[in-house]
Image 1: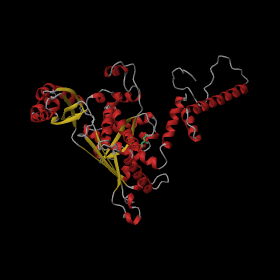
Image 2: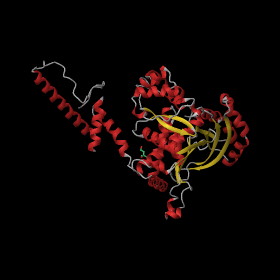
Image 3: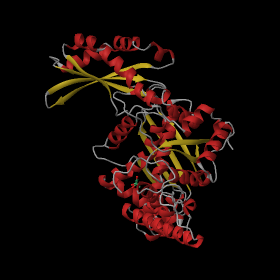
Length: 487
Ligand code: MEV
């Protein structure tokens, strides 16, 4: 139990075994969901009418599974992590590894102030270096003009903080590029920054003799970083017959691979973003902005690298005693670190409009955008650890396959209990595919028809020609389905 989250623990054993209704009830115990919030989880995440207010040319609403990762304890505080994601295993993997870390280690987080960068491009300045100097000299006036655009931001302690200027050599000649640094507090900040940047156009043109062209936020939000660090004892991975020490060695080798190879680093980082994006989507944040920032940051050295770092703490038995110093000290804790740009908001965008994003933020219980960013960094780090743990032990497919098989079964027409039956058979056989699912369903249908015939014969009754047939087992049509285009 944890005092910092109203005494509620995110350690919810068996949550995954509950039915959807029971999970919503459990969740309501955690955060007291109103009837309306429960309605949005059960029935209508987003109404078409509301969607129509959000973007153009709306013709419907697109749904995604909305799950909750349990067991997270970050800096002594318990969190349930809302995740919107279509990929199976991500929520389960995060929950499981969060449990290992809370029981055998800990997670700490930190972040910078929420400073976003607004870029202003000035072309055609007759003397770019002199233009640069003049912009820097006018710093106070520039900040004043910028801050006049958003008095509310100023009131809550944010606002334009500084201006930086570079002269960039481009294929079309030198350009003066000014960066307006804005503390955006709890907003994602793009709107505030873009408004300020646009408002500075005339002033900067007068100052430089050039023409202001682009005025737009940068998604490489490297002044707005979130950091998470976790440490976990190797014994945490002594599961399912695996040796925790070997698992940790495997993870360090997996990390070394990613560090040495951008092909692997991209996939390694995709695993990190599985966690971060799912949380961003659930909370109505601009996940494309986070993605763009994360990958640009991963390439900041000029080479694309992993977003996380993994090492062993120097607290194990001496390396030389083990004769393999190149792998670090056996016995030492596994240390994971992440630092990632985190342009997230609690206000603006879909966060305050989308009914389920509002529920997600309530579930998460963060009070500032900085806290949201820190939690997101921790989730990314845990997700990365979960992926590497699977990859260096049983492989990723085992976990993926049972849920994947269920999806295949549904796409082949199974419904109700038949979904689990068809999926289990495909997993048992090691043959998961649409055609195989159809075959199993047809086979089950024929078997059920034979049973019906036998029953009819036993009863000595000829069924009337138009009598409805009893439902075959396994059930293939208990849920309403659109008319099939082909069978
Ligand atoms: C799959 O969505 C993510 C992984 O490929 C990440 C990784 O390889 O580290 C499993």
